[in-house]
Image (cartoon, rainbow, N blue to C red):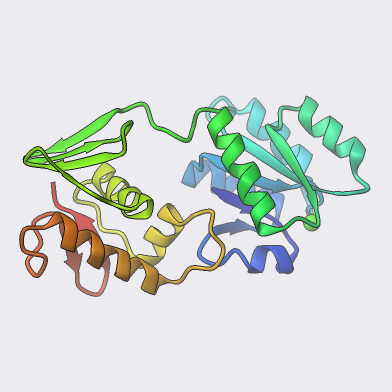
Length: 217
Ligand code: CA
C-alpha cells in the first residue's frame, strides 16, 4: 500500500509505510513499488490527486491498482469526479485509523487483491494451504495465529529473499498503525517455536545477522 498525503499529521502517523508527499513522488513510487493499493489525497501540491489518478488509470501498467481517495468534507465535486475517473472508494477527512483500515480492507476484498491466485505452497515436508489458512508439517497441522500465518506466507512467497524488520512490518502489519519492529522479532520467535524442529537452529526461518530474516526454501 502506498499513502500519498502532504499533511504531516496524517502522513506522520503512518510510520513504517511508504508515503509520497506529492503527485510526482506518487507516480514514481507506484511505478517502482507496484503497490496493490494507493491511498491518494485529492489536495496535493503540484499534480493534484485526481490528475495522479487519471494518469494511473491511463497507464496500461498501473491501471489495475486499487485507489482509495482522501477528500475533505467540502470536496464533494472531487469525490464524484474521482469515482467517475475510476477511484474504488473514498474516505472523508477527518477519519479515524479504524475507518481507513476498514475501507482499505473492503476495497482490497472487492477488487480481489486480498488473496493471491495461488492456493498452496509446499517446501519439502512443510505445506502452506493459503486458501484454507492451514499449515502442516509432515501432515500434522501447526496452529498459527493470523499474524503468524501472514508473516510465514509473506516470507515463503519470497523464498531466499532477506527482509529487514522494517520491511516485514510494512508488508505484514501494513494496515495497523501502532506497531514497532520488536513486534516482528517476537512473531518470528513464536513462529519458529511452532514451525521448527529445533528453533535454535532453524531450518526455514533463518536470521541474517545485521539484516533481517529470510525463508530458506
Ligand atoms: Ca492534502
